Length: 410
Image (tube, helix red, strand yellow):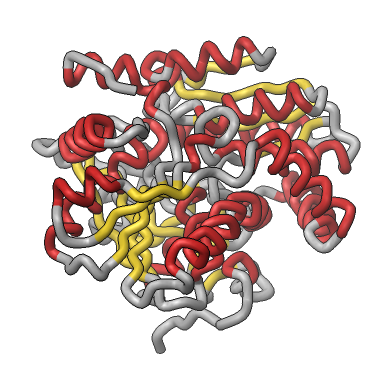
């Protein structure tokens, strides 16, 4: 029996009583010590998301702290250069701090204040989730601790410097691959021992169900803005509309697609294909990975022959994750979204072309999405519309880009 999306029900609520999407993905596979804090947070969030005062506060901070709405622009030069479909961008990187992670961080800090917590702790890979949490924590007078893989600390230096400037403590994670997957694990271990005083912010739509819901609910601001902007631009939602987003943990894509769920818009998620000549990647949906349990949730996970979490590789720290949000597993199996991947080399070429032709400079994460748009546009007619979520600014990647290309354009 094939899975189906239930219409008129928010994506985050399409789970069963066991918090499973389609009976297969998600859930709360957690130790007994986490059950009460998870239950408490779940009850608090379900209350707050329906509280008019909380919603008013959220919107106020989104408008006056985050800088909503972010721009929606046509990429005239890129469209003319490629021919075929008309290409637009939702420039979420114009949000305060340079990426979509600010929405989730802001909501988590609002929740922390409501819960009476004085400390927030979070994980980060590309550094944007950590940078945004440090910014929001400073705004709300909360003390902040960020877990980050030692490998990512070296390759995402600008965001590391920003976190420290905002007063956050950065905890280097030297276990495993020393990347995002290990940072999430260490962050969760810390929270188990400190949940009475500390609120945990998971940086993407991964982990136990409540963290998936909070994150996707927060980033849905992207599509709330976009659906209005699309209707203003075209008078209606175009019949042939493709929404392309990079996918690592899956937070920006979930937010980008949310309000279009009941429309005919086609969703295309682009995972990290890794180096062209390597067998390693960070694309579990594209490469037929099996279902496993990672960070408290059932999902498609890159695994070795013994079922252990497999190694990954990507030029993009924000996409370098062996699993994928249960929401995206559900969207894939219901065929509501299509998933593909772009290699490191394709992402770099996309960054070069977009930065050269347009007045935006996407980070290496959305450069994967632009790579797919560049492949796809010439094959389509001029009546078709592609919108790419440019969800991060390239400033954090300037050292990597200089090393790979010899120059950096912003």
